[in-house]
Length: 200
Image (cartoon, rainbow, N blue to C red; front, side, top):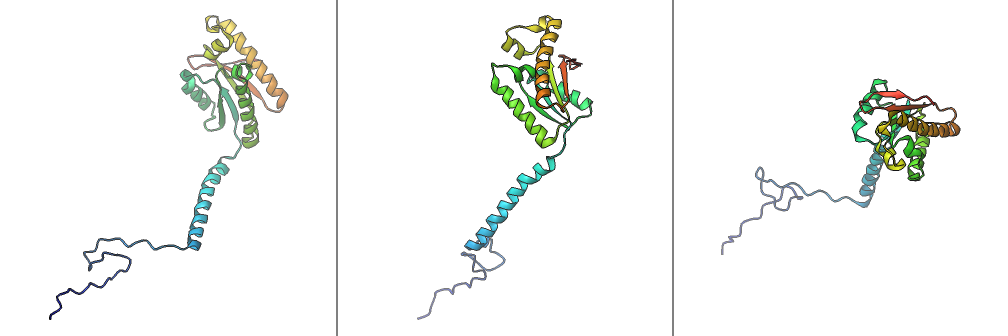
């Protein structure tokens, strides 16, 4: 009796389970299994790469910075603040902390955690970036002043200047006590983006 069974094709690639003769085979070889030792090596390598990615940018950024800027969160003036700082040649040379009310936000008892947050940021900026000055920038028609102090000072520009000057001076005096070596600059921005220096 004649054997009609077709001979099995010899696998050219033992990693391909459905191998047919070349060049028709489209199967990708199965990945080789790795042992525990190889796995540990790969895991260690991946961890080292991840650690480097975390450390390298930090190391690159750890340098001196011209200033820490404290400003209000008012969306109307964010672009103006950046333009003002750029105009002073401080692009990418300052840290920026944003609090509603700026100086008032840092001094009010109504939201005391804001003041703590600012002071903590200031300490980090001094330690990490060796800032050379603190710039405190309030602005006119500030909603935080209306909310916290309960009065619309924008209706009386002279009184508005006076109230901002008081809070700028309070915060500047405190910083001078904590860090006598750190110059403090006090500013008041108008809604058109122009800036007044406030003498303390």
